[in-house]
Image (cartoon, rainbow, N blue to C red; front, top):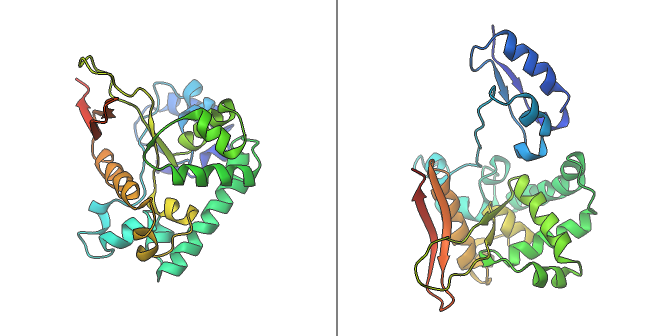
Length: 254
């Protein structure tokens, strides 16, 4: 008769068959709160054994609306440091930067292997950093593969890894019959601005303001804030071959 919380459930996939039995015995909602750092696609047990028994919610890092209006964190700090609590609530920018460096190292060396990905951490670090340089740009698999010395197939696999672990967003192009030639490849964004800045070695606002990623980092930051509140809306971007562009298009699903 108490709420049961299971954290980092991706490390114990064999728990899902047990949960299925317990849920079927007592269908009261909200008995279990299951938390994890991977998408349902990586947890086949959840989709196979809890279909019709589970509701899924994506929890974001701290949002502007959660910390800036209260005065706890400034807008500039949230953008520079990103929304992970250990980073944005650090005593100073240097401590925040060190936290993000450790997060990146742990994510690559421990979290990804535990999810079954067998890519060397240095290779994945180089690829992740390249994605930070390409923040907000239209995806070109072949060019990205050439830049890091691998195939476009491997690049697609690496992108899927980052997307399924919620650190990368692939924003699709608008599909519409507008009588114009539209760009048909997605744009890629690393979802947390603080991770972008850490991957690029940008520890202060002055560092960010003098770097080419300045504009696209802010663009991605704003997009993430908007999409966190855009429940029931489909997101895309609009760009024509002639260069006309809208960074974010939202369409009501109904």
